Length: 389
View 1: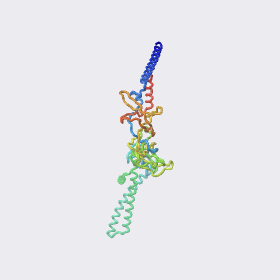
View 2: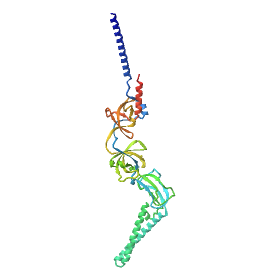
View 3: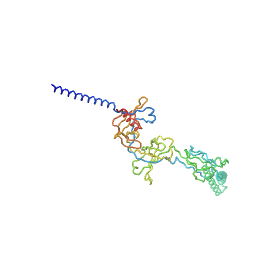
View 4: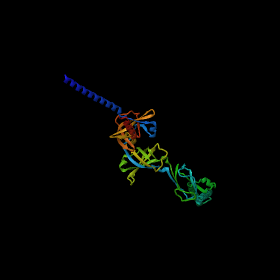
């Protein structure tokens, strides 16, 4: 009997120990559940604004099948002009400064010189001589037809008439080159100075003269550029030339707009190689051109040589945690924002963008944080630490 009581006592002790272990295990499990990490980062609207968070939906982007090319912005030859005088003279007036917008035919400056007066005087004399010779020709013609005048005299009068006509035509063309109205000169209105006119619409890029300066004929007085047709001039290396053709899209950036990628379309591919470096010029017309593009700006671009597109995110939208990569979905919750991690697989990198693949499909309307992923991960992990026991 005593032995039985002893065995029963041992059994009760062991049973209590097992219950105690079970209670401890259940307690630990409850604590672990309470300590399970909150898989999100919360930002107040103030934090959201301070971080300049950028939120958008996922979209496809050309991430492969392209040729890298650099170059600069240029204008076609017909959109650029060097203004020179056709006759030497002293600068008496300058009407523009660098940066001024001008129209074709606007006066840029005036020059004067004795030769300007001389050519007008010669024209007046030639016109008067022509009028006299026309009368003499008509008189000799009547005499010749009446059988009174000699044929030789008539022919001489005809030759002199043609000579004076040629002088008048030549001098008239000179006046027109000098931007002087021949009809006013015929009336005796002699111009002491002549205007230098803009040959194109555009902006004055350079003024190379000063008041009182004597300028020889063909001196470069002004440089004018019309930026309305500014385009991209890229240099494509020999190994990539066969891939490039008219009609392909070009995506490029310029230093003055580093956060904006502009788009252009190839309009021509040169047939001649430059020797240093061994490359050809590729010209592309800019689509939706902003108004602050200036010829000579450096361009870094890529030419799309096929139509393969992939889902992509900016580098700042992706964070690495251990061996995995994450992006963050974004949801507005009242006066705050909730950001939850989504595991992704990264692919091709191109510029500041990275090709991604989602491990789980997301609704099309899901919004994604396009920047500050590193900060969001740190905030989330800080929140996890704050909930542990």
